[in-house]
Image 1 (cartoon, rainbow, N blue to C red):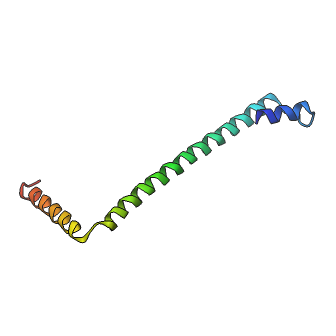
Image 2 (image 1 turned 180 degrees about the vertical axis):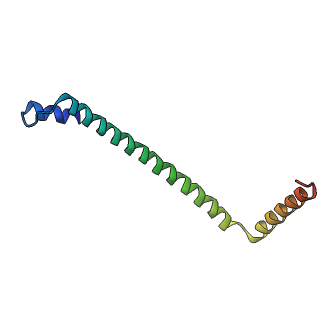
Image 3 (image 1 turned 60 degrees about the vertical axis):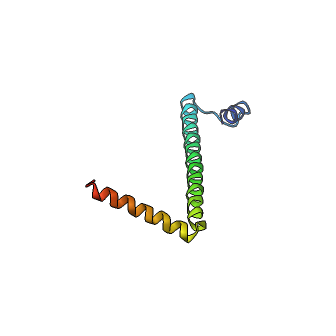
Length: 86
């Protein structure tokens, strides 16, 4: 962006004060950083979404007998915890 400002000044198209140039660059850099942060957040959410989707796919692919065994094991653990007063 600074290069475009320099070219426009050399060509005589613009005459901008140094303070305005610094303000413009500060705003430009802030917007660029916001865009990078947004891109990273979108990428992280996409990766997390794929991970959660894969987990649900594994549940969907699980046989009913395996699911019942896991449910029974969970119930045994819960009963053990309740019996110990936790």
